[in-house]
Length: 142
Image (cartoon, rainbow, N blue to C red; front, side, top):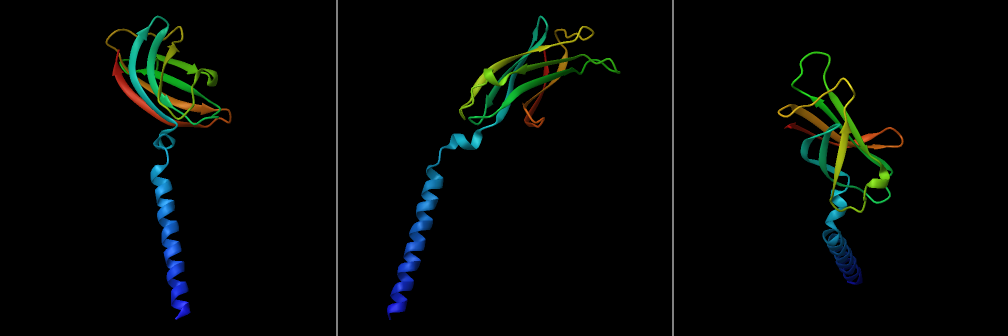
């Protein structure tokens, strides 16, 4: 008789622990699940190439930069116009929340972009060890 009471108490205690653990998971902040995300909001012409408005979120303590690359899709062949830009880690606010930033992309001398061009823009995080992650891509007409 005593062993069945002990079993019931153990089962009850285990069930209470499982429910308490589930409650902690449900109450955990949702912001943690959305860190290190990127979204391209807008691509526009800029006097030295292009600019892209990006919405981003990142983990606190991250040691990375935000990189943007663009390719002009209107140009067939090998001489395709390109542009690139970077936001250094000091310019990023990494607190799990969403933030917006403008990345100015410079085009090399031989590259050019004009109103009506179709461009493919890619943004991603790049860390000190050479890894890139959280890629976002968008085709847009400037």
